[in-house]
Image (spheres, rainbow, N blue to C red):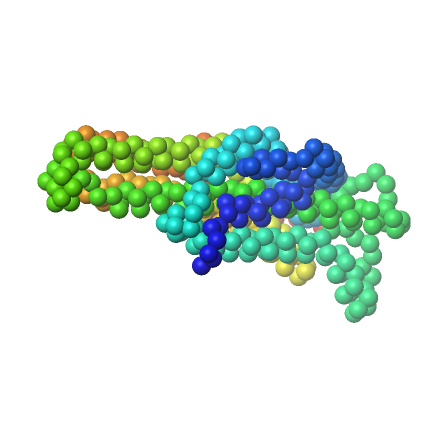
Length: 423
């Protein structure tokens, strides 16, 4: 265990690094002021990054539209739909953070005010354990998705060096990581081809950075809230309610009124602490609700199209890449659902903690007020993808069932008209 207190920023450092990589500060850091020069440089880089990502998205959408209109390249178009869904989710997540920067700053500042600062306090909150657990999830999550995107980014180059240069099996030619429509021909021009290649790589990494930053910040806030809910439950369970007939109270020479005042003071502290956590939980839903809904919707579509691609007889290279993409999409949803479930259970346990401590010897006023805390805890904090979807581990099961139904419909439609679609 470290001899120095763990800084609050250790929970958000990875998310902030990814936000900075696209030119965005998600929130004002406590006690720090961003210089005007840095702010302007970040703004210029942010505009350039988002413009490049959306131009690439537009070119992919035009390719899909033309493929469906001309009834050609249907398989490639459906494969591209998966990537388009990924980019759209990234766009929504980046926009939601940019638009609600002030609310996020207020939420982070409120969390920072509740954060235990000393080693003794952090030991009570089990801060080091929570941080290490979060870091294991976060770094594995980041590594997996970086491998995914760079596998797609470098796939054409790997094809070229393996099949054309090394094995000399076939001529690969110039290909891009993602199919797109352009008003010019880049096949016969080296500088156009390499420019297109670099812009697609930059767009893919920018989209990934926006998605990772959003999910990591959401997870970091959820971990903090879970930590506070668990500490609140421990404080309630450990509290020994005073009574005029209690031996400890007799030794202190306290009267019944003094015992009741001691309990009521504890109760006021607990209620205020509970209310602060509840308020932050609500802001968390307000900030991330829409992006979560888009994320779940898009993931369902991605699973449909990826499964469709795998089952129609694609080559082995594409199947491996698509299976990897599917796995990463499921991991992303699992991470969100896992922390949502932990938050739900931690906030719900408050009512059990109230019941578990020795409330039965306390003053009548104290016992009556406990009922209100228990009643409020019966409606636990939930991570919501808007009011339509309450996120938990069961949500992942529902998502998989919905995705499979969609895949079955698409596969059936494709099988009924094999001659009208050109592969």
